[in-house]
Length: 202
Length: 170
Image (tube, rainbow over all chains, first blue to last red; front, top):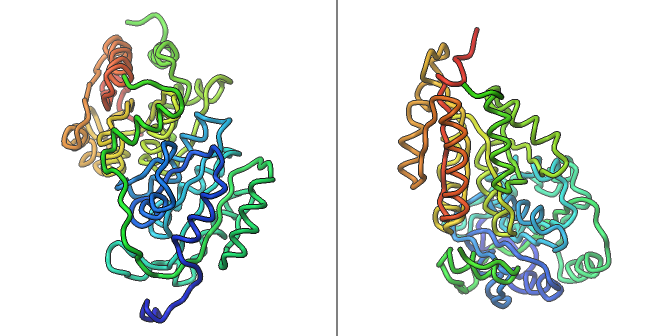
């Protein structure tokens, strides 16, 4: 049974959790999945190294893969939602086989499609994205449920030298905070990040 | 006729265009090109579970400064349509090389609907489409498609006619 979203407190405040993740981003490049993850990443502070998606559902982690392969010296962080990642479960197999050591994927899992009216998602019916990633061969995976666990995770990530991609599921409350909107100009966002990396526009 | 087979020639042209990143869904028509990429220590290859993954990966690779090519069969073009909004909307270079099915001498009727729709749907989402029916055409098409993609920020699909590939034998 899927209960009323209002009755469900899965875990964390999404904005606070994303802020915690990004406070320790260092020089990482950040890709955000469409909808609330893009608003969360923007709310944590706009940055030239942020690549906000407003579409291309299912593409966030794969854009992260291409970016990680072309920038092997930089850490790449993907922050996306359960619905966005569910649309691309095969991507987890592709990323695991490609095996980029500098790619970390964070799935903000509220077990709902927040942008379209809080319809329930597969993760509320027993599908565990971290377990799928683990089976595919991701080096580290876990489900994180409290701010203390996020702090422990970010401290661990700051110190570790991974040899394979990692994926962490953050259980968050199914609530939509006020939207925090980055630019929707896709060419501007692309050129801003490429300039940050030292590339000039054509 | 070309002195060396087209896959080697096309691979040469891709390398000349500084493309060192290849994503593919396994395909008979592309098998030689795929193997050349895998065997090349200077090239990063990605095996995909579905073609639209390659569109997102190539866009991410360009974001990080690397030129990429995506290899697929015409049946996979249908899988890519919404993801193509990513390179189109971000105006990121995209080079796809598509082996055609569902046309010249096709035996399998299930290949026909997507094969016949391939050019129309690519055009509808905003890609430049170049069709090659001879190996000489193909090498020239890949050359100029790479120039147009990476020089003019265009999204370009080169279609390799089934007439060139030869219909699959059953």
